[in-house]
Length: 78
Image (cartoon, rainbow, N blue to C red; front, side, top):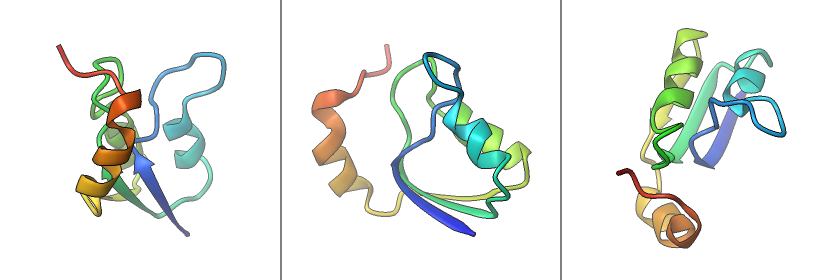
């Protein structure tokens, strides 16, 4: 199974479980991610969780388009 996402799956637990953990436990084999989440609490951590679980992660496909769309909604790294 392959999943395609615009933004890196979250690695933290908030009001919902970590998306990266849910995907890792789903049997997912391949994930295509347009861009990393620039928020310091997540940036790269969701990708690392998935890779540690054996998921092949491909990063940067359509990154410019995703960034242009999502930038107004995202935190910037400090």
